[in-house]
Length: 69
Image 1 (spheres, rainbow, N blue to C red):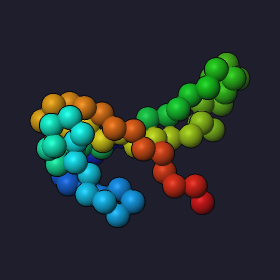
Image 2: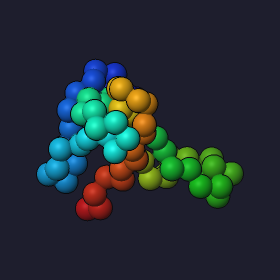
Image 3: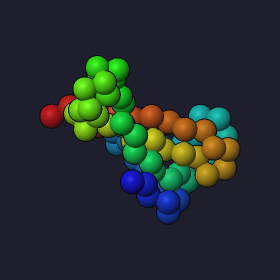
């Protein structure tokens, strides 16, 4: 699942800017943080998920874990 519409985002109350090119438009992708044990046992759905913000100017990817609840 991904959000392919470039937009500006805030993370923890701060505007997200690319640390490489200072651009401020990103698309979002979601990734599973797989572990060998859960993959081997077929329980990939139990792994944590991360949000990937992809800079639309240079392609730099920033990974963020969702806040723990």
